[in-house]
Length: 498
Image: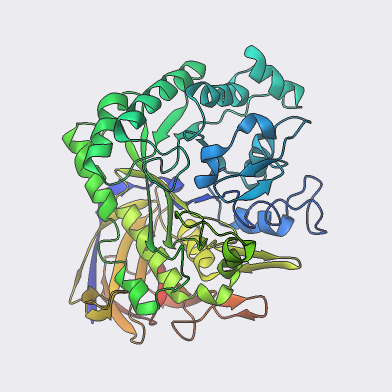
Protein backbone atom coordinates (compact mmCIF):
# COMPACT_ATOMS: atom_id res chain seq x y z
CA UNK A 1 0.00 0.00 0.00
CA UNK A 2 1.44 3.36 -1.06
CA UNK A 3 0.60 6.20 1.33
CA UNK A 4 0.38 9.64 -0.28
CA UNK A 5 0.32 12.71 1.95
CA UNK A 6 -0.69 16.03 0.41
CA UNK A 7 -0.02 19.49 1.86
CA UNK A 8 -2.37 21.69 -0.14
CA UNK A 9 -1.17 24.79 1.72
CA UNK A 10 2.38 24.47 0.39
CA UNK A 11 2.47 25.67 -3.23
CA UNK A 12 5.53 24.70 -5.26
CA UNK A 13 4.66 26.75 -8.34
CA UNK A 14 2.09 27.50 -11.00
CA UNK A 15 2.60 25.85 -14.34
CA UNK A 16 2.19 27.72 -17.58
CA UNK A 17 -0.41 26.11 -19.84
CA UNK A 18 2.17 26.32 -22.65
CA UNK A 19 3.86 23.17 -21.36
CA UNK A 20 0.98 21.38 -23.12
CA UNK A 21 2.01 22.91 -26.45
CA UNK A 22 2.45 21.20 -29.81
CA UNK A 23 4.49 21.33 -33.00
CA UNK A 24 3.83 20.84 -36.72
CA UNK A 25 6.31 20.63 -39.59
CA UNK A 26 6.35 20.28 -43.35
CA UNK A 27 7.20 16.58 -43.13
CA UNK A 28 5.32 13.66 -44.69
CA UNK A 29 1.56 14.13 -43.99
CA UNK A 30 1.58 16.68 -41.21
CA UNK A 31 0.66 19.71 -43.34
CA UNK A 32 -0.30 18.56 -46.84
CA UNK A 33 -2.78 15.67 -46.88
CA UNK A 34 -2.91 16.31 -43.15
CA UNK A 35 -4.29 19.43 -41.49
CA UNK A 36 -4.28 21.30 -44.83
CA UNK A 37 -6.18 19.38 -47.50
CA UNK A 38 -8.34 21.66 -49.69
CA UNK A 39 -9.46 18.74 -51.86
CA UNK A 40 -10.90 16.74 -48.96
CA UNK A 41 -14.70 16.71 -48.47
CA UNK A 42 -13.92 16.97 -44.74
CA UNK A 43 -12.21 20.36 -45.14
CA UNK A 44 -13.69 23.82 -44.62
CA UNK A 45 -13.65 26.71 -47.08
CA UNK A 46 -10.08 27.53 -46.07
CA UNK A 47 -8.80 24.03 -46.78
CA UNK A 48 -8.49 22.84 -43.16
CA UNK A 49 -9.77 19.46 -42.01
CA UNK A 50 -12.63 20.23 -39.63
CA UNK A 51 -12.34 16.92 -37.75
CA UNK A 52 -8.67 17.62 -36.97
CA UNK A 53 -9.47 21.20 -35.95
CA UNK A 54 -12.13 19.92 -33.55
CA UNK A 55 -9.69 17.42 -32.00
CA UNK A 56 -7.08 20.15 -31.56
CA UNK A 57 -9.62 22.43 -29.89
CA UNK A 58 -10.59 19.74 -27.42
CA UNK A 59 -7.04 19.57 -26.06
CA UNK A 60 -6.87 23.40 -26.05
CA UNK A 61 -3.53 23.60 -27.86
CA UNK A 62 -2.01 26.62 -26.08
CA UNK A 63 0.88 27.22 -28.48
CA UNK A 64 1.80 25.71 -31.85
CA UNK A 65 5.37 25.72 -33.20
CA UNK A 66 5.92 25.92 -36.99
CA UNK A 67 7.33 25.47 -39.70
CA UNK A 68 10.05 23.20 -38.30
CA UNK A 69 12.10 21.38 -37.44
CA UNK A 70 14.82 20.61 -39.97
CA UNK A 71 12.52 21.92 -42.72
CA UNK A 72 12.96 25.51 -41.60
CA UNK A 73 16.72 25.64 -42.16
CA UNK A 74 16.29 26.09 -45.91
CA UNK A 75 12.80 27.68 -45.84
CA UNK A 76 12.29 31.20 -47.18
CA UNK A 77 9.01 32.54 -45.90
CA UNK A 78 8.60 35.20 -48.60
CA UNK A 79 8.04 32.51 -51.25
CA UNK A 80 4.93 31.29 -49.39
CA UNK A 81 2.86 34.46 -49.01
CA UNK A 82 0.81 36.39 -51.54
CA UNK A 83 -0.63 35.19 -54.81
CA UNK A 84 2.66 34.30 -56.52
CA UNK A 85 3.59 31.18 -54.55
CA UNK A 86 6.87 29.59 -55.59
CA UNK A 87 7.30 25.83 -55.09
CA UNK A 88 10.75 24.80 -53.91
CA UNK A 89 12.72 21.65 -53.39
CA UNK A 90 13.04 21.07 -49.66
CA UNK A 91 16.62 19.92 -49.20
CA UNK A 92 16.00 18.81 -45.61
CA UNK A 93 13.42 16.16 -46.52
CA UNK A 94 14.14 15.90 -50.26
CA UNK A 95 10.62 16.61 -51.54
CA UNK A 96 8.97 19.46 -53.40
CA UNK A 97 6.93 21.79 -51.22
CA UNK A 98 4.24 23.72 -53.13
CA UNK A 99 4.37 26.61 -50.64
CA UNK A 100 0.57 26.78 -50.65
CA UNK A 101 0.68 26.63 -46.83
CA UNK A 102 2.63 29.62 -45.52
CA UNK A 103 2.54 32.27 -42.83
CA UNK A 104 -1.01 33.48 -43.52
CA UNK A 105 -2.37 29.93 -43.48
CA UNK A 106 -0.48 29.12 -40.27
CA UNK A 107 -1.92 32.15 -38.51
CA UNK A 108 -5.39 31.18 -39.72
CA UNK A 109 -4.87 27.65 -38.33
CA UNK A 110 -3.86 29.08 -34.94
CA UNK A 111 -6.94 31.31 -34.92
CA UNK A 112 -9.20 28.35 -35.70
CA UNK A 113 -7.85 26.28 -32.80
CA UNK A 114 -7.35 29.18 -30.37
CA UNK A 115 -3.58 28.74 -30.17
CA UNK A 116 -0.66 31.14 -29.79
CA UNK A 117 1.54 30.98 -32.91
CA UNK A 118 5.22 30.22 -32.35
CA UNK A 119 7.37 30.79 -35.45
CA UNK A 120 10.77 29.16 -35.87
CA UNK A 121 13.06 31.07 -38.23
CA UNK A 122 15.59 29.99 -40.83
CA UNK A 123 19.01 30.24 -39.19
CA UNK A 124 20.53 27.74 -41.61
CA UNK A 125 20.55 29.37 -45.04
CA UNK A 126 18.66 32.44 -43.83
CA UNK A 127 19.90 35.78 -42.55
CA UNK A 128 19.24 38.07 -39.62
CA UNK A 129 17.53 40.48 -42.00
CA UNK A 130 15.21 37.78 -43.38
CA UNK A 131 14.17 36.88 -39.83
CA UNK A 132 13.46 40.50 -38.90
CA UNK A 133 11.54 41.01 -42.17
CA UNK A 134 9.28 38.15 -41.03
CA UNK A 135 8.63 39.96 -37.75
CA UNK A 136 7.80 43.09 -39.74
CA UNK A 137 5.31 41.19 -41.90
CA UNK A 138 3.58 39.69 -38.88
CA UNK A 139 3.68 42.46 -36.30
CA UNK A 140 4.05 45.98 -37.70
CA UNK A 141 0.83 47.90 -38.30
CA UNK A 142 1.58 49.47 -41.66
CA UNK A 143 5.20 50.62 -41.68
CA UNK A 144 7.57 49.31 -44.31
CA UNK A 145 7.11 47.08 -47.32
CA UNK A 146 6.43 43.86 -45.39
CA UNK A 147 3.57 45.15 -43.23
CA UNK A 148 2.11 46.71 -46.36
CA UNK A 149 2.51 43.37 -48.12
CA UNK A 150 0.51 41.65 -45.35
CA UNK A 151 -2.23 44.26 -45.75
CA UNK A 152 -2.17 43.75 -49.52
CA UNK A 153 -2.64 40.03 -48.86
CA UNK A 154 -5.88 40.75 -47.03
CA UNK A 155 -4.75 41.07 -43.41
CA UNK A 156 -5.25 44.66 -42.26
CA UNK A 157 -4.55 43.97 -38.60
CA UNK A 158 -1.11 42.73 -37.43
CA UNK A 159 -0.81 39.06 -36.48
CA UNK A 160 1.05 40.06 -33.27
CA UNK A 161 3.14 36.90 -33.13
CA UNK A 162 4.75 37.03 -29.70
CA UNK A 163 6.94 33.91 -29.68
CA UNK A 164 9.85 33.40 -32.09
CA UNK A 165 12.68 30.89 -32.15
CA UNK A 166 15.98 31.65 -33.84
CA UNK A 167 16.86 28.42 -35.61
CA UNK A 168 16.38 24.72 -35.06
CA UNK A 169 19.12 22.31 -33.91
CA UNK A 170 21.80 24.37 -35.66
CA UNK A 171 24.34 22.66 -33.43
CA UNK A 172 23.78 19.36 -35.29
CA UNK A 173 25.72 18.11 -38.32
CA UNK A 174 22.39 16.89 -39.79
CA UNK A 175 20.98 20.42 -39.94
CA UNK A 176 21.29 22.45 -43.12
CA UNK A 177 23.46 25.45 -42.29
CA UNK A 178 24.87 23.95 -39.09
CA UNK A 179 26.99 26.35 -37.07
CA UNK A 180 29.91 26.23 -34.64
CA UNK A 181 29.30 27.63 -31.16
CA UNK A 182 31.12 30.83 -32.08
CA UNK A 183 29.22 31.25 -35.35
CA UNK A 184 25.97 30.60 -33.55
CA UNK A 185 26.53 33.22 -30.88
CA UNK A 186 27.26 35.85 -33.50
CA UNK A 187 24.24 35.01 -35.71
CA UNK A 188 21.82 34.86 -32.79
CA UNK A 189 23.07 38.20 -31.47
CA UNK A 190 22.57 40.01 -34.77
CA UNK A 191 19.25 38.29 -35.47
CA UNK A 192 17.90 39.07 -32.00
CA UNK A 193 18.92 42.71 -32.30
CA UNK A 194 17.12 43.16 -35.60
CA UNK A 195 14.03 41.22 -34.53
CA UNK A 196 13.73 43.25 -31.32
CA UNK A 197 14.21 46.45 -33.32
CA UNK A 198 11.28 45.43 -35.52
CA UNK A 199 9.12 44.65 -32.47
CA UNK A 200 10.52 45.03 -28.93
CA UNK A 201 7.58 43.07 -27.53
CA UNK A 202 8.52 39.73 -29.11
CA UNK A 203 9.92 36.95 -26.94
CA UNK A 204 12.93 35.17 -28.43
CA UNK A 205 14.33 31.70 -28.05
CA UNK A 206 17.45 30.19 -29.62
CA UNK A 207 18.45 26.63 -30.39
CA UNK A 208 20.50 25.02 -27.63
CA UNK A 209 21.15 21.67 -25.98
CA UNK A 210 22.52 20.39 -22.66
CA UNK A 211 26.08 21.29 -23.66
CA UNK A 212 28.19 23.66 -21.58
CA UNK A 213 30.39 25.05 -24.37
CA UNK A 214 27.49 25.74 -26.74
CA UNK A 215 25.27 27.31 -24.08
CA UNK A 216 27.92 29.38 -22.36
CA UNK A 217 28.89 30.93 -25.69
CA UNK A 218 25.24 31.55 -26.59
CA UNK A 219 24.24 33.00 -23.23
CA UNK A 220 27.40 35.05 -22.77
CA UNK A 221 26.87 36.87 -26.06
CA UNK A 222 23.08 36.85 -26.38
CA UNK A 223 21.59 36.37 -22.90
CA UNK A 224 20.41 39.97 -22.66
CA UNK A 225 18.28 39.52 -25.81
CA UNK A 226 16.82 36.09 -25.04
CA UNK A 227 13.66 35.26 -23.10
CA UNK A 228 13.89 31.50 -23.69
CA UNK A 229 16.44 28.79 -24.34
CA UNK A 230 15.27 25.94 -26.57
CA UNK A 231 16.05 22.25 -25.97
CA UNK A 232 14.88 19.10 -27.76
CA UNK A 233 14.91 15.41 -26.95
CA UNK A 234 13.67 12.13 -28.38
CA UNK A 235 14.47 9.09 -26.28
CA UNK A 236 13.80 6.10 -28.55
CA UNK A 237 16.01 7.07 -31.49
CA UNK A 238 14.90 5.22 -34.64
CA UNK A 239 15.59 7.50 -37.64
CA UNK A 240 17.33 4.83 -39.73
CA UNK A 241 15.83 1.52 -38.51
CA UNK A 242 12.29 1.45 -37.14
CA UNK A 243 13.11 -0.92 -34.25
CA UNK A 244 10.90 0.56 -31.54
CA UNK A 245 11.48 0.04 -27.85
CA UNK A 246 8.94 -2.30 -26.23
CA UNK A 247 6.87 -1.30 -23.20
CA UNK A 248 9.55 -2.04 -20.58
CA UNK A 249 12.35 -0.37 -22.54
CA UNK A 250 10.13 2.67 -23.10
CA UNK A 251 9.48 2.91 -19.37
CA UNK A 252 13.22 2.69 -18.73
CA UNK A 253 13.54 6.02 -20.54
CA UNK A 254 11.52 7.67 -17.77
CA UNK A 255 14.51 7.38 -15.43
CA UNK A 256 15.90 10.92 -15.13
CA UNK A 257 13.44 12.04 -17.78
CA UNK A 258 14.16 15.68 -16.92
CA UNK A 259 17.97 15.43 -17.00
CA UNK A 260 18.21 18.06 -19.77
CA UNK A 261 16.15 20.50 -17.71
CA UNK A 262 18.37 19.91 -14.67
CA UNK A 263 21.54 20.52 -16.66
CA UNK A 264 20.33 23.67 -18.40
CA UNK A 265 18.79 24.98 -15.17
CA UNK A 266 22.17 24.67 -13.45
CA UNK A 267 23.88 26.64 -16.19
CA UNK A 268 21.26 29.39 -16.13
CA UNK A 269 21.62 29.62 -12.36
CA UNK A 270 25.41 29.75 -12.58
CA UNK A 271 25.19 32.61 -15.09
CA UNK A 272 22.50 34.35 -13.00
CA UNK A 273 20.00 34.18 -15.86
CA UNK A 274 17.43 31.81 -14.33
CA UNK A 275 15.11 34.70 -13.39
CA UNK A 276 15.24 36.13 -16.91
CA UNK A 277 15.37 33.15 -19.27
CA UNK A 278 13.02 30.16 -19.19
CA UNK A 279 13.39 26.78 -20.85
CA UNK A 280 11.30 26.00 -23.93
CA UNK A 281 11.36 22.21 -24.35
CA UNK A 282 9.94 22.94 -27.77
CA UNK A 283 10.39 19.59 -29.48
CA UNK A 284 9.95 16.27 -27.68
CA UNK A 285 8.47 12.82 -28.02
CA UNK A 286 9.26 9.32 -26.82
CA UNK A 287 10.11 8.12 -30.33
CA UNK A 288 12.07 9.94 -33.01
CA UNK A 289 10.67 10.17 -36.51
CA UNK A 290 11.62 7.41 -38.94
CA UNK A 291 13.25 8.87 -42.09
CA UNK A 292 16.19 6.71 -43.25
CA UNK A 293 18.92 7.71 -45.71
CA UNK A 294 18.47 11.46 -45.43
CA UNK A 295 20.49 12.73 -42.47
CA UNK A 296 23.52 10.56 -43.17
CA UNK A 297 26.41 10.76 -45.62
CA UNK A 298 24.82 7.82 -47.45
CA UNK A 299 21.82 9.31 -49.24
CA UNK A 300 19.00 7.21 -50.61
CA UNK A 301 18.97 7.13 -54.42
CA UNK A 302 15.61 5.50 -55.03
CA UNK A 303 12.56 7.05 -53.34
CA UNK A 304 11.62 3.64 -51.99
CA UNK A 305 14.75 3.91 -49.84
CA UNK A 306 14.17 7.34 -48.35
CA UNK A 307 10.56 8.49 -49.02
CA UNK A 308 8.42 5.35 -48.82
CA UNK A 309 9.80 4.24 -45.41
CA UNK A 310 8.24 7.34 -43.85
CA UNK A 311 4.89 5.58 -44.18
CA UNK A 312 6.02 3.32 -41.32
CA UNK A 313 5.33 6.26 -38.99
CA UNK A 314 1.64 5.82 -39.88
CA UNK A 315 1.38 2.35 -38.34
CA UNK A 316 -0.99 3.03 -35.44
CA UNK A 317 -0.10 -0.23 -33.69
CA UNK A 318 3.17 1.44 -32.65
CA UNK A 319 1.45 3.95 -30.34
CA UNK A 320 0.50 1.92 -27.30
CA UNK A 321 0.17 2.42 -23.56
CA UNK A 322 3.98 2.70 -23.51
CA UNK A 323 3.66 6.04 -25.32
CA UNK A 324 0.86 7.18 -23.03
CA UNK A 325 2.70 6.31 -19.82
CA UNK A 326 5.92 7.93 -21.06
CA UNK A 327 4.06 11.08 -22.12
CA UNK A 328 2.36 11.41 -18.73
CA UNK A 329 5.70 10.90 -16.95
CA UNK A 330 7.25 13.65 -19.06
CA UNK A 331 4.37 16.05 -18.34
CA UNK A 332 4.63 15.29 -14.62
CA UNK A 333 8.32 16.21 -14.77
CA UNK A 334 7.63 19.47 -16.62
CA UNK A 335 4.95 20.39 -14.07
CA UNK A 336 7.46 19.83 -11.27
CA UNK A 337 9.92 22.10 -13.08
CA UNK A 338 7.32 24.80 -13.71
CA UNK A 339 9.55 27.49 -12.20
CA UNK A 340 12.03 27.16 -15.10
CA UNK A 341 10.11 25.35 -17.87
CA UNK A 342 7.50 27.64 -19.39
CA UNK A 343 6.83 25.85 -22.66
CA UNK A 344 6.97 22.34 -24.15
CA UNK A 345 5.91 21.22 -27.62
CA UNK A 346 4.97 17.63 -28.40
CA UNK A 347 6.38 16.78 -31.82
CA UNK A 348 4.31 16.57 -33.88
CA UNK A 349 0.62 16.98 -33.14
CA UNK A 350 -0.56 15.20 -36.31
CA UNK A 351 0.54 12.08 -38.19
CA UNK A 352 4.19 10.89 -38.10
CA UNK A 353 4.52 10.25 -34.31
CA UNK A 354 1.63 12.62 -33.55
CA UNK A 355 -1.17 12.16 -31.07
CA UNK A 356 -3.72 12.50 -33.90
CA UNK A 357 -3.69 10.33 -37.03
CA UNK A 358 -5.67 11.33 -40.11
CA UNK A 359 -6.94 9.31 -43.04
CA UNK A 360 -9.28 10.06 -45.94
CA UNK A 361 -12.43 9.28 -43.97
CA UNK A 362 -11.60 10.59 -40.50
CA UNK A 363 -9.12 10.56 -37.65
CA UNK A 364 -7.73 8.24 -34.98
CA UNK A 365 -6.94 9.55 -31.51
CA UNK A 366 -3.79 7.75 -30.43
CA UNK A 367 -3.04 6.90 -26.80
CA UNK A 368 -0.99 10.08 -26.32
CA UNK A 369 -3.94 12.27 -27.36
CA UNK A 370 -5.93 11.08 -24.36
CA UNK A 371 -3.05 11.98 -22.03
CA UNK A 372 -3.18 15.59 -23.24
CA UNK A 373 -6.96 15.52 -22.87
CA UNK A 374 -6.57 14.38 -19.24
CA UNK A 375 -3.86 16.84 -18.27
CA UNK A 376 -5.33 19.86 -20.03
CA UNK A 377 -8.94 19.37 -18.98
CA UNK A 378 -8.82 17.58 -15.62
CA UNK A 379 -5.56 18.52 -13.84
CA UNK A 380 -4.97 21.64 -11.76
CA UNK A 381 -2.63 24.49 -12.68
CA UNK A 382 -0.90 24.90 -9.32
CA UNK A 383 1.65 22.34 -8.11
CA UNK A 384 1.40 21.50 -4.41
CA UNK A 385 3.58 19.52 -2.08
CA UNK A 386 3.09 15.80 -1.70
CA UNK A 387 5.19 12.88 -0.59
CA UNK A 388 4.82 9.13 -0.90
CA UNK A 389 5.82 6.27 1.35
CA UNK A 390 6.46 2.63 0.48
CA UNK A 391 6.37 3.09 -3.29
CA UNK A 392 7.10 -0.31 -4.85
CA UNK A 393 9.88 -0.60 -7.40
CA UNK A 394 9.95 -2.50 -10.66
CA UNK A 395 12.77 -3.98 -12.69
CA UNK A 396 13.00 -3.17 -16.41
CA UNK A 397 15.56 -3.64 -19.13
CA UNK A 398 16.50 -0.66 -21.22
CA UNK A 399 17.03 -0.92 -24.96
CA UNK A 400 20.67 -1.89 -24.44
CA UNK A 401 19.70 -4.78 -22.15
CA UNK A 402 20.81 -3.13 -18.90
CA UNK A 403 18.63 -3.87 -15.87
CA UNK A 404 17.19 -0.81 -14.13
CA UNK A 405 15.21 -0.41 -10.93
CA UNK A 406 12.46 2.22 -11.07
CA UNK A 407 9.65 3.33 -8.81
CA UNK A 408 6.44 2.00 -10.29
CA UNK A 409 4.36 5.11 -9.51
CA UNK A 410 4.88 8.71 -10.64
CA UNK A 411 2.68 11.03 -8.59
CA UNK A 412 1.95 14.75 -9.00
CA UNK A 413 -0.38 16.77 -6.76
CA UNK A 414 -2.13 19.90 -8.02
CA UNK A 415 -4.91 22.31 -7.20
CA UNK A 416 -6.66 25.08 -9.16
CA UNK A 417 -5.97 28.79 -8.85
CA UNK A 418 -9.57 29.71 -9.75
CA UNK A 419 -11.61 27.04 -7.90
CA UNK A 420 -11.41 24.75 -4.92
CA UNK A 421 -10.34 21.13 -5.04
CA UNK A 422 -7.34 18.91 -5.66
CA UNK A 423 -6.33 16.84 -8.68
CA UNK A 424 -3.74 14.10 -8.40
CA UNK A 425 -1.93 12.64 -11.42
CA UNK A 426 -0.99 9.01 -10.74
CA UNK A 427 0.99 7.15 -13.41
CA UNK A 428 1.32 3.42 -12.84
CA UNK A 429 4.27 2.26 -14.93
CA UNK A 430 4.02 -1.36 -13.85
CA UNK A 431 2.94 -3.44 -16.86
CA UNK A 432 1.03 -6.10 -14.88
CA UNK A 433 0.34 -5.07 -11.27
CA UNK A 434 -2.47 -2.97 -9.88
CA UNK A 435 -1.35 -0.47 -7.23
CA UNK A 436 -3.26 0.51 -4.10
CA UNK A 437 -2.78 4.03 -2.80
CA UNK A 438 -3.98 5.58 0.43
CA UNK A 439 -4.59 9.35 0.33
CA UNK A 440 -3.96 11.32 3.48
CA UNK A 441 -5.71 14.68 3.19
CA UNK A 442 -8.04 16.67 5.46
CA UNK A 443 -10.82 16.95 2.88
CA UNK A 444 -13.63 14.86 4.30
CA UNK A 445 -16.97 14.98 2.52
CA UNK A 446 -15.65 15.99 -0.89
CA UNK A 447 -16.56 14.02 -3.99
CA UNK A 448 -13.85 11.83 -5.52
CA UNK A 449 -13.77 11.08 -9.25
CA UNK A 450 -11.27 8.92 -11.10
CA UNK A 451 -10.40 9.58 -14.75
CA UNK A 452 -8.31 6.75 -16.19
CA UNK A 453 -6.51 5.78 -19.41
CA UNK A 454 -5.59 2.12 -19.64
CA UNK A 455 -5.90 -0.57 -22.29
CA UNK A 456 -6.53 -4.24 -21.65
CA UNK A 457 -2.83 -4.88 -22.23
CA UNK A 458 0.29 -2.74 -22.21
CA UNK A 459 0.30 -3.03 -26.02
CA UNK A 460 -3.26 -1.76 -26.53
CA UNK A 461 -3.66 0.87 -29.25
CA UNK A 462 -6.24 2.68 -31.36
CA UNK A 463 -6.68 2.41 -35.10
CA UNK A 464 -9.22 3.03 -37.85
CA UNK A 465 -11.05 -0.16 -36.91
CA UNK A 466 -10.39 -0.34 -33.17
CA UNK A 467 -10.54 1.77 -30.01
CA UNK A 468 -8.73 0.07 -27.16
CA UNK A 469 -7.48 3.17 -25.34
CA UNK A 470 -9.80 5.90 -24.08
CA UNK A 471 -10.62 7.91 -20.96
CA UNK A 472 -13.15 6.38 -18.64
CA UNK A 473 -14.65 8.06 -15.60
CA UNK A 474 -15.67 6.53 -12.27
CA UNK A 475 -17.30 8.20 -9.27
CA UNK A 476 -15.61 6.89 -6.11
CA UNK A 477 -17.96 8.50 -3.57
CA UNK A 478 -17.21 10.87 -0.71
CA UNK A 479 -13.63 11.36 0.42
CA UNK A 480 -12.60 10.15 3.85
CA UNK A 481 -9.12 10.73 5.23
CA UNK A 482 -6.84 7.79 4.38
CA UNK A 483 -9.12 6.79 1.55
CA UNK A 484 -7.88 3.78 -0.46
CA UNK A 485 -7.94 3.81 -4.27
CA UNK A 486 -6.68 1.17 -6.69
CA UNK A 487 -5.16 2.09 -10.05
CA UNK A 488 -4.74 -0.28 -12.98
CA UNK A 489 -1.43 -1.47 -14.44
CA UNK A 490 0.07 0.54 -17.35
CA UNK A 491 -2.33 3.38 -16.61
CA UNK A 492 -2.51 7.15 -16.46
CA UNK A 493 -4.96 8.50 -13.86
CA UNK A 494 -6.32 11.79 -12.63
CA UNK A 495 -8.00 11.66 -9.22
CA UNK A 496 -10.12 14.73 -8.51
CA UNK A 497 -11.24 15.59 -4.98
CA UNK A 498 -13.77 18.42 -5.12
